[in-house]
Amino acid sequence: MARRRKSRGDRSVDRASVISRVVLACLLLATSSRSIHAQGPSLQIPPEARASPAFDAVRATNAYLASVPADKKARSDAYFEGGYWLQLWNFVYGVAALWALLAFGWSARMRDAAERRTRRRPLQTAIYWFEFNVYLALITFPLTIPPR
Image 1 (spheres, helix red, strand yellow):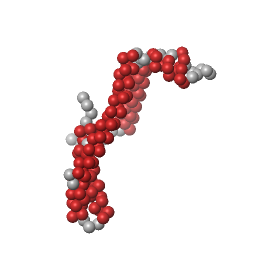
Image 2: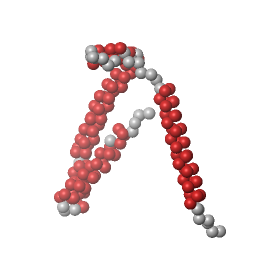
Image 3: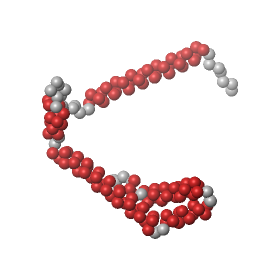
Image 4: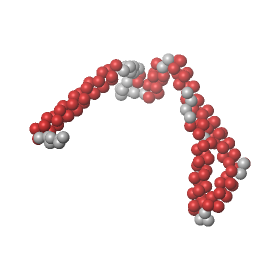
């Protein structure tokens, strides 16, 4: 069965239909985003933190911190200080991984393998670099998994 070619009148109706649907979708999105923002928590700004000619950043900061509940502040402090411990253990783990590379002779084996593959020094360096990055990615993979 042969397809009938659309006339100009049919195309303009289709185009008008698509345009009206796009406009309707935009209006729906605009109204829904307003209602979402209206339902959000309201921000309580302490009087010391409001903009004024006598604004003092230290007083504003202290006023805000005084408004934070003690349990939430303790949780925030623990989270912040935990980041230091994560950085420390990440550093220690990295040093141990690099030490193992040297102590067990893996680095020398990787260098020897690169030398066997090619006689060109720049290519040897590139091959060693690739092997080193694969080793480092595999050995540090456990640190990249986020805790549950």
